[in-house]
Structure formats: structure tokens, C-alpha cells
Image (cartoon, rainbow, N blue to C red; front, side):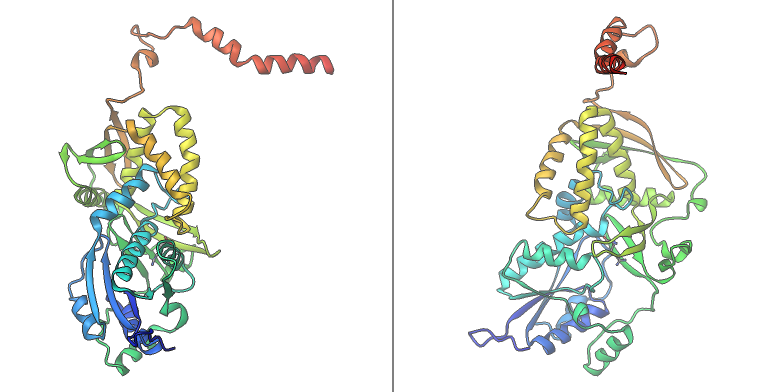
Length: 407
Ligand code: ARG
């Protein structure tokens, strides 16, 4: 396909580039197949930085421009904290770590495409996953004039063929030791699938876990921590105020050392496939547990129950790639509004794979010990119970009577 524009220049494609085999080979493939200039953009959402200079390598491999953009701070403030406020766990178990990074990456790619006047955005997703949907939908929801190219969806190829393609075209690649797993990683968690994990009966082998200690090998004495929240957002760990990135990293370490955050799940992909995946999300699991406990103390029962329903819908929208331009934002506005009083401190015990809430306090607490106590300090008006129950039971009493007469 030829892609010259009216001014005779080649059209541009912004490639979501990781430096790995697929996207390195894609730089050449895109030029070859679409006759376009490639701008290779590496976006960091908190994954460990790679040691080799992938930007320089992209340029050597034919990209006309390449850049590394670190968006970890924005990932925390605009994606992780909003989803924490929603206690976001897809299918009650997966903290959506991969899913929430995709709309941000899409946003950055669109920004670069707009600034560069590019016609295309390319990404390395295959045809079977959720991420292709999140990228494609995220991109067109922000700029409907952009077209998407997904080389790995069009060019179904094996790793061996890709290595051969690289050799033939002089593409510089770093061939790592072949791993049976497919991994994705960012600040909120790590995902792992393929290999033996495709057998849902097989216990995940030890080499699946890279960020957590086996709970059986975790310390024999518990670690106690305190997390301070302000309006639903964690602001301090053990009394030390820190920014979001530092707090998540510190908590990931503490919780990971205690074997917390391992998840093994058969999940429903949007594309209709059930897949088995493991996740490691020590900080996410700990923070969601803590956040829920603080909500239990500071929100009314009605709000908690209504919010639970909304949270499920929220997770589904995020998982399904509908972060931008639809129902997610108004739901987010509701969730944010509920967080006004979610301020306080949660005390947790981290011990051999579990993060248990053992204490809570809040200046906005709705817990009234005068009302709940069974001691002499009781302030509850006991007589009021009788009248309350009379009214509460009135519909039941009325219908029992009316129906008894009809029998
Ligand atoms: N199943 C998860 C999701 O759709 C993670 C996908 C990426 N996983 C991977 N191992 N490459 O959000």
C-alpha cells in the first residue's frame, strides 16, 4: 500500500514502541508495507526501565523520530487513584492493572500524532486480546480521523519468522531468552499468561511470580503498617507523607515481601474468550482492602450499597476499553463525590499472603461508640426500637392480615 499525501511527503505513523521483538520488527514492516515514516514512542507507566537505549535503537532501525515519555505520575493521579476510589476489581479479583494503563497510552499516542500531523497510529497487539480494543477505541474516541494499524493482527507470524525477518533486513533486536509466558507490567501490577498457565488445572509454577515472595516463605512475624487517606486517596505510609508513585512502590515492596497480591484467575475477555491469567498486584490489593475498610467507616449504608453496584459497572467499562467519552466519566463523577469524607487511617497486618485490616480511625467516622456500645456508656434510646420495629413491620403485618381474610 502506498501512503503518500498530497504534498508528496510520506504519511506518518506513530508506533507504540516497547523495544521488544514485535515492535522493533514493526518499524521496518510498517515502512515496507505502508510506505510511511515511523515515529517510535516508548511510554513508561511505571514498568522497570530497560537498560538498553531503545530510543537510539529505534532510530538505527529506521524510525525518523523516537522518544521515551514517562507518564508514571499522570498514571497515578488520573488512572490509578480514580480506579482505587472505585475499589476497581474486575470480576471481583483483577485490579485492572493492565487495563487502566491502555487509555493513558492511547492518549499520549494521540497527542504525539496530533503534534506530528500523523495519519496513523500503530500498536503491537494481536487479534485475540482486550488490549487491541482498548487502544483502538481509546484512540478513535480522542481523534476519530486517525487510522489504526496493528501489524501483529495483520501479519500473523511466529517468533522464529520475526527473528528471520529481522536478520534478513538488518534489524537490530535484543533476543532475550525465550520465555513461555506473555507478560505485561506497570506500576499497578504485573500480568502473566501463556505457557503452562493455559492448563487451568495446573498450579502456577514458581517462575510465574516475579514480584512477590511465596507466602509460605514470607517472614514468620507480621508487618504492621498504617495508611493515611485523604478524600479516598492514600497520602502517607506509616505516617510519612509521600507522593503516589513513591507510596505505591514502597507498599509494593512491603506487601510483596509478605507474599501479598498473587492472583490466579480464569477471566472473561471482551472478545468472548475465557483465559487463564495470573497477576501480581501487592500494593493494589492492599490499598483496595484498606480503602474499602475506610469507606465502611465513613460512608452511609445506602451509599456503600449503591456504590457497589456502580463499581461493577465501572470495572466492566474500563475492562472493555470504554474509558473515554461515554458512561465512565459521569460514573467517575459520582464516585469522586462519595470520597469527600473518605479520610482517615487504616492499620493493617501483612502476614504470609494476607493483608488484614486490624484498625481504623477517621475524623469523618460515622461509627458512634455511644450508639454501638453494650456498656454503661450507652446513649441509644432503647424505647425507640419498639416503635421503629412496629412501623418497619407494618407492611408485613398488614398483608398477613389481609391475605388471611382471603384464605
Ligand atoms: N487479561 C488482562 C487484561 O486484559 C491482561 C492482559 C495483558 N496480559 C499479558 N500477559 N500480556 O487486562
